[in-house]
Length: 208
Image 1 (cartoon, rainbow, N blue to C red):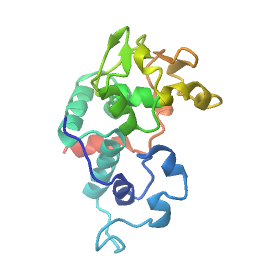
Image 2 (cartoon, rainbow, N blue to C red; image 1 turned 60 degrees about the vertical axis):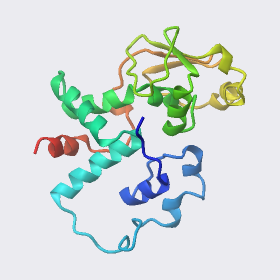
Image 3 (cartoon, one colour; image 1 turned 180 degrees about the vertical axis):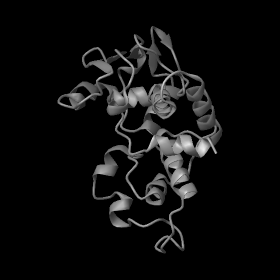
Image 4 (spheres, rainbow, N blue to C red; image 1 turned 120 degrees about the vertical axis):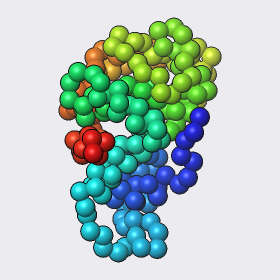
């Protein structure tokens, strides 16, 4: 499976905001964008004129990088969103939120989406009783995601219940701490998606 394997802090610096690609590190003083808030590269500190195309491109790149999706797959998500009913931009974000690697991260099983992707790839989760190791698997309302029985002995999951106490979970996911289980109780609404992306600019970008 193709994916970005370069330094992720560089991506945050390029977009000029925290994309929270490294989990708890992004909240610490080690965050690269706190120390060097300018874009990477030789001309990172130079002034750049913002164009309409440039703004649209940046919003698209932010969404891609937050969810860890490459260009071709992102285009497929957009095409699917455009075919379905509703507002295309909101539907696009909804599809990205319903990816299994994002869901396990939202539920607190993983510290970041990249860690969630790795855990899914290693077969640590079941969906409705069946093991799923495809990070891009789209869950549906009513689906139940559970940590596989053999995986419960891993320290990461043993500490899960304690680390989740007091933490806020998105309203469309119901989490049972002691059972290491998450249930999709609804579909994410735009107000539930807290990523710093202006999706209407992404729609304009692909509608050119």
